Image (cartoon, rainbow, N blue to C red):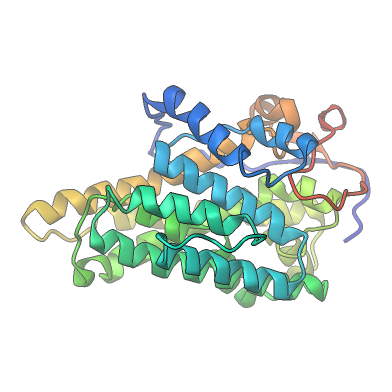
Length: 337
């Protein structure tokens, strides 16, 4: 989608959000380990790996490893044909279901990453977690493949189709299940309508933030068909700033609803209540962590993320040629401000 050079203002995504940033005290010792773990697979070119190394992930070892797997799948699938993305998802699921079986020689590297991840996490997690994670990861892989189908046709989906697929591709399903790593919440509790709506609301908050903050990079590389800003522009015949403002209002509406519904979390009168509270709080903190990560990781704003966050204004980047190698695109941050 062609966008003329202009300056845009970003929404204040922190208004009325009650969950402050919280960094795990063990981040420092875990972060270097997980970065090296991901780099050893050689999933990116040397130049792209340097860009990836600037990203910091704010969870413990298993979560950090999962974030690296997300990141690599996202970058590899963005440059793959739909059939290849479907195959990548199949490789993931086979590796997770059969972690004790060596992966075939020459197979896509995601399979071995998933196998090692699952061998590690299965030793410290409950069977309930494992069952839910496998289901959530499969749904995520299906969503990414469906997105690849749309991308291959340069097709901008309507609002309903967009949300249906984007709620899967944003990756909150497996990420939220990660909070249950040591829990055995019964299905009838986990599937309670209030808990499910809270989960969907945070999923929407995360995807709106991600899409708005990544839009500039994506429109510059002409990979913005599956972005809420582009979808709003097409669906409601709006310009870029109007669409960003509209996305901001959608975010604010969901924040208000989440805050209301949080007060209505049922009580089951037992240890389950504490697990449910931990789960919902983890979901909420994911939104906070996602916001800060988006500004600080270097993926969307280069080294100027904190400046953009402070001013909430930036220039739209010019169209740029994107290399065909796998890995993150380096943002020309001097053009942002």
